[in-house]
Length: 127
Image (cartoon, rainbow, N blue to C red; front, side):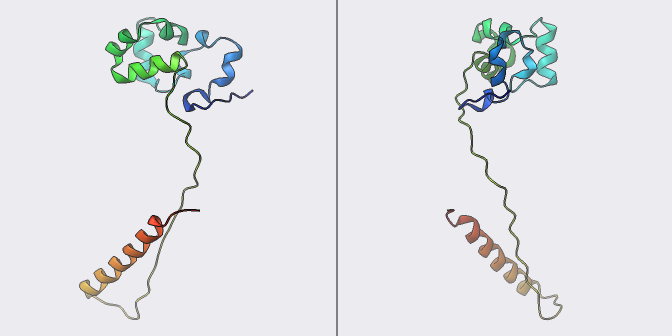
């Protein structure tokens, strides 16, 4: 089973909507780590439904800005668009000197030249 959504927070739990999201544990929501789960559990909040039924101001007072985001996710609100996958790119450059050198200025100048060339590669517009 898979869920499809335009919002990234609900991609992992989209398939749960066949049942009822409200009865699922709060750990299924983004931004719920161990500490947040322990805190909310200690006050009796263990299901997504309990978070969604709370006034947003209450959870915001308990958890700050993150509490507001958690409340929004529990109520199927996510304003962050899905970011397309981009392949990570490794770029390197090497230079062999004709002979060993201890001339710091020459080595520094060569290093600067290589850094500038690499910067141009990264600044070049993609396809």
